[in-house]
Amino acid sequence: MSTETTTPDVVVEALGVAVGIPVTGEAIDRLRRQWSRALTERPPTTSVDVTRDESDDDAAFDYAITTRVTLAALDATAGQRINLHAGAVADEEGRAIALVGPSGSGKTTAIGMLAGRLGYLSDETVSLDDSLVVHPHPKPLSVVIDPVVSPAKDSVSPDDLGLLRPPASSYLHRLVVLHRGADDSGMVPLTAARAIVEIVEQSSSLVHVDQPIRRLADVIDACGGAWGLHYREFADRVDEVVDLLDSEAQEPPARLNHPFDGRDAAAVEGRWTRTPWKDAVEYDDELVVMVGDRVQVLGGLGVALWLDLGEPRTEDELVAEVTAAWGAHPQAAELVADALGVLADQGLVRPPA
Image 1 (cartoon, helix red, strand yellow):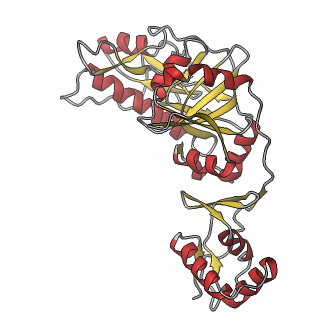
Image 2 (cartoon, helix red, strand yellow; image 1 turned 180 degrees about the horizontal axis):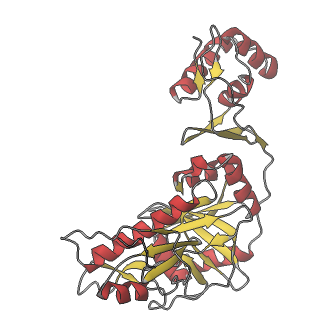
Image 3 (tube, helix red, strand yellow; image 1 turned 180 degrees about the vertical axis):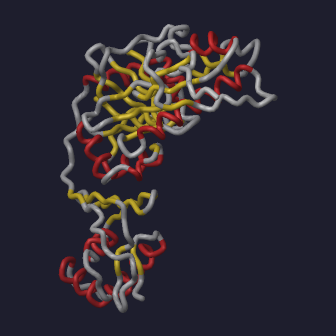
């Protein structure tokens, strides 16, 4: 039996990964048209399953293929890059704006509008390496062609939609978190801690990146901070987003990194300890901590106690340290006990054994 393998008729470049789509028949031409911006002659490093459900029409099948290609590229880059659920466009200089948001936040609509003025990089996934290079994912866009005929969405090539092409190389220049809803207040700067929490929720396999919170903080600092866009209709905000390219960057806030120290996970008799954490970044009055794949932002007493637990401490020792730092308080013991209870409920500290 022959062990020869053949290159699929459709191979696309997704996030810098050559992904094979081994379709046959009329699906070859249809998918090559949809993926016109991403076709490559490179041999595939991975391929997707093209099994088709008997109930699927072409639109459903094509959408499923797009999802599988994206997931294959994300799997191939997991742990190596910051991968965000975001769309991106870039100007002729290669300065890219990423719009971060969950499904339903209007990313595809927003990118479609922006890509009439800036080059289309992706409407779904932004993949960043250490130098902030944006690895393109010019996938088909899922859009309603004619709502009068059918409300169903089709996969359409960015070429057929007339979206502009980006330069050969782009890097992240500005970062926007989408907030679509009743609030129409427009663009507002986000604190770094808040931005990290919101972006982590819209990331893929971030937990596999070394020091993920520090890496994300580096990204936010390097691209001039993060902004939140509160809007009802994106058409009213296109100029505001484009103008962000030339806006003044936010001043990077001072911060300290607290990577996991590799300590034993066992509880300590008579002493409170930190739960093993993945990474943490301390700002002026806030602390962002990742435990597992969850992120918490601490403030006030929570920050002080977590930092004091750099070594196991008894509750009396913690009360003494807080009092020394903040001054005497008649309810110091009760406040510390309550705060420790909250931290324990959040999974950030462990009670004495």
